[in-house]
Amino acid sequence: MIKLNSIVANQFSKKSTVFNMNTNTEKQQFAQQLKAAMTAMGYEAKASILEREFNLRYYGNPVTIQGVTKWLRGQSIPRADKVITLAKWLQIEPSQLVCGIEMKEHKKQWKDEIGYQDREICEAFINLPTPQKKIVREVILTFSKSCKS
Image (tube, rainbow, N blue to C red; front, side, top):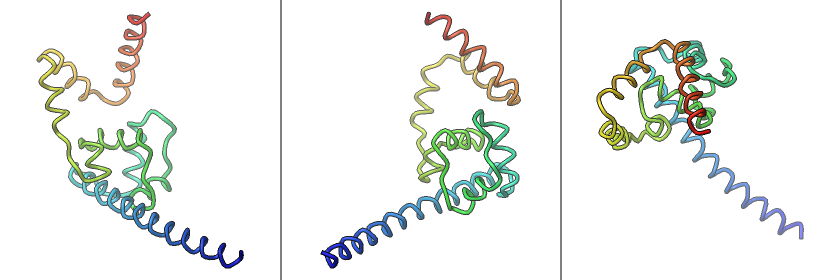
């Protein structure tokens, strides 16, 4: 019985190592994409800059310098909501940030479906400072909720 348990434990250990290697590769890829995107936007790929710029745009609990350092070192990948915030800030698709894959079809389709007036509004919103974006977002969500009722 002891021999069987050690064989199972050994096999589990091997599978766990393979899983961790894949996960580590994904984390390293994310870190590379993040650094490249920051550099492309004219930012230095430093934890202090990433922490400041991210927390200005993220509406949840702020991230710590230790957390963003792990992102830049390839030790962790943030949750999806944080990846989306990063992608918006760095003006790339979330899939490109996480996987290195760019998906432009959805953007093109969305742009074709809206009129020029809606595009102007969206562009004006995007160009607003972050505090004003929060206010506009709250106003729109309030109107949306009141119309559904």
